[in-house]
Image (cartoon, rainbow, N blue to C red; front, side, top):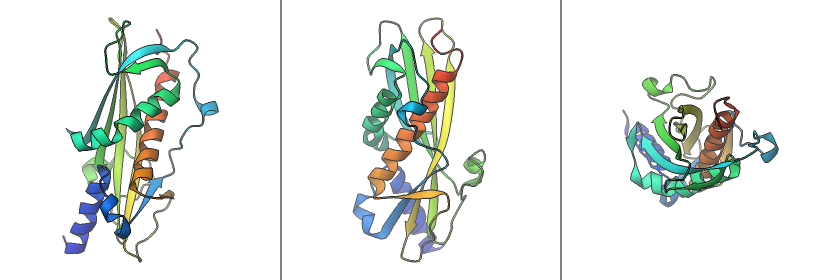
Length: 205
């Protein structure tokens, strides 16, 4: 791998944990637009929302990343609240025993082992000086003691372009910076996964 490729991959990894602000001058960030951020009117309505304990983990290739988790936690809490699926979400156990586990796993789109299964059309790999980072958001919901676990997931991507000659990724919208890119990715991933959860016939039973 060349020094340039190594630098690109390194910047992409830093982008995954939202600590690239110091490198903002050398990078542009894009969020894949194939997954839409749901408007309130597009979300499935819950007639009688119930409380749930909210647990969150951010992973890098399946391994917990506490730095990224702490950076993204507030965005995830807001996305869960915006979904309207629950009356209250708290890190503490709730009287009804419901538990919502949200996990965002960052995987490199240049790694064939993780690229498989992403939305058709993603730019897997390098395009000039552009690297894609995939994000798999999984929500596991248990509606109380004796309830059946329901699992839903959504996939998205952030692209990091370096240098004036870097290609603009297709099917992606430019973000003002890494903070906006991560915020949009997390909000729409969590929102879409929760919308699928609410639409599941087993939710609320």
